[in-house]
Image (cartoon, rainbow, N blue to C red):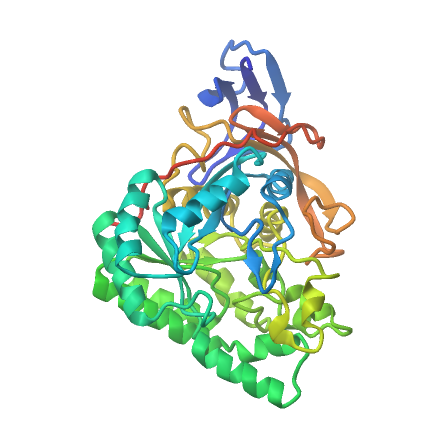
Length: 463
């Protein structure tokens, strides 16, 4: 592979911004120094003048090939990781699913088989626990030791994923003893099902009603509940895809009490709203996801939470379904629209636009998109930063390039863009994964199978 020198750029990490050259050898960063202060030689030189040199993004929440509602997410591990690379993300953490009545290891084996030899970038797994019992609780210990150290439980989707409070408490107690991190989808699914039934009975069938029945108060209630359960268990907690200002308030209150409670939000909640769900001619179906999009006034609380660190991570919850043939399954009944949106390619650019718009700083951009997810899920400092010893997952980013987001130009395997026509400043130019070009001057240079599986350590924020 030889040595690579990245020269002349502004290196941005979660803690520093400095004009520095970066030397790569053997797939890792081996040295950094101010421009022209050294006499390094290299086989490959990348001129990053007028560009940012940033760590590859870590997307801690994706669902490639996920089964849902009689269909599958449209991105495979091959297409989805290629699209991630185009968007400046070099690591994904996807969700393996325990089959109902089966073991955690069965679920992990199934997802390993889906991903093995397919990924363009490095990948890891969380485990969705859909059947909490004595056997699966014991298996949690084995998985943590093997590098799958986070477990997702749902207070939503009765009959599919929902775990009751006793099951969630037992899983949290197990995590408190084995170092695992429990992640929760926090919505009151039983109450939501009542509201869905009543809405359909009234003839309310359009996509916008998906947002109306999944009320913000039911997200807040479930968030409060899982926080208190984690407190009883003495375990850390990570709440996924926080969308409502009332849920942010619950997290802020818990953190003010000193509890090890963490929150993630996603670009769709920061940039889209119920206005999109209400688009006519069934177009709103494109924006059906859970937790749902909220009215625009919730966005201010999410941005504030990211600035105050009451929300620590921005992931995508990338779970794409094509409009034609998949989202259309819910015509005439919003409850049958597959829940999920595309976004793995858009996250880094949208968050850079947030820097341009003054919502966050450049270092906070890298913190919430790269460093903190790597720390949260036991991958730092191998991933999430640029420093000697770190994997050379590096993005050359042009902050001056303007782009218009569109399904015509994106690389995700889905027939629409959630951000169609949106103009943003900033664009990925070159992406290195462990020192190897995956995107080279806006040309795809990667291949399926380059990405390697990453066993993870435990959460670096939990006691």
